[in-house]
Length: 398
Ligand code: NAP
Ligand code: MG
Image 1 (spheres, rainbow, N blue to C red):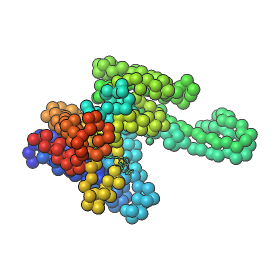
Image 2 (image 1 turned 60 degrees about the vertical axis):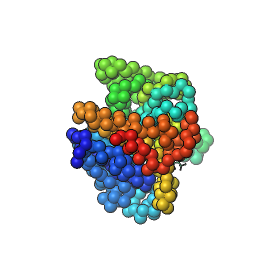
Image 3 (image 1 turned 180 degrees about the vertical axis):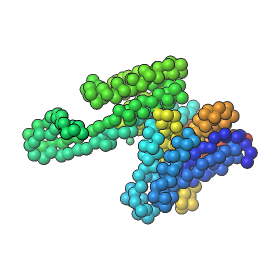
Image 4 (image 1 turned 135 degrees about the vertical axis):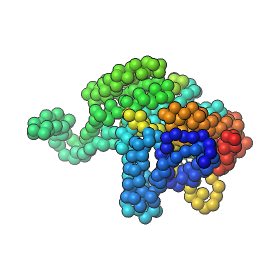
């Protein structure tokens, strides 16, 4: 093989449906002709996960631990319908969930910005990245319907059998209760991943909770996050990164007036809501990348969208699709830039940037997939197919 030498292997995780089709095109046209690279390939396509009883997903996560950087195609998280469609042994868990747990990482979603697409919030000029804590809270809550009068208590029992009790509510009428929890280690890992990301990307760091109301639960998050920031103060200062703690409602209002260039770290539920608000504000899902960062600096890059199922069924009928490959391409370039940085290879890093420039150049020249047309100003003359877009980007690389 010829091309730029990538010193350390890169972990590649293949996926499903339309994004799998796009994946192969990206490799063929934008990656393999230019790089001398050792790809450690793991097929996380649903069939292979089923064949291996999902062992392939754990193997891929182990490979990311071994090599440090991975790039992942979107995958199907099977539901009952998919179990039938693919004749699966069972509804395997989400590969993203498995890999995230294995790496103890945090997912950061970042919009790709281009000159001729303006965010719907006028002040946003630079990316706003949401860092969502992804453990516990209502996602691991326990709930109970209360139909008759009675007392609900929180009971904590030590291993020695000592109990402490707290009255939740004395019910006189029907109602409902929920108990949630979180873990010091998980919050600390989250804070460390956010700090690593903010330093990598040279962005301001915000963290938001509601500790004025929830003095213990939210207060615990605020305290741990603040402690990790204090411990990393020298590194943050050196990178010129400022940190602010804001109440979540204050932050939600402030973010509308900011230019961007902010990593906004939030709790699990707030992240669920605000990542979709921010994504919608920046435009298309096809222009949103995602990176999983572990507290000890392991990286997995991917597109934020799914496998674009509807387009895949069109593709299967033999119809050309106009699916946006940009986020998948940026998953590759993000991984290559990080690989280059960790290997101390400017050439590899520069190649990643060159591909990104080629892609943005296409969009700014009006060569776009269908999803971008309504967002653009000025409006392009038309749109290209998935393959047409990738070929146009490739043509700018030679
Ligand atoms: P999706 O892949 O996110 O797509 C939903 C819709 O958004 C598409 O039908 C399309 O709208 C639009 N869209 C998303 N990405 C696009 C792109 N690159 N270019 C153009 N349009 C794009 O969600 P889905 O089709 O509902 O889900 C399919 C599978 O993805 C599910 O099995 C789910 O488990 C999986 N999923 C995986 C991940 C992951 O691996 N990270 C994340 C989310 C979902 P139009 O149809 O209107 O054109
Ligand atoms: Mg959501």
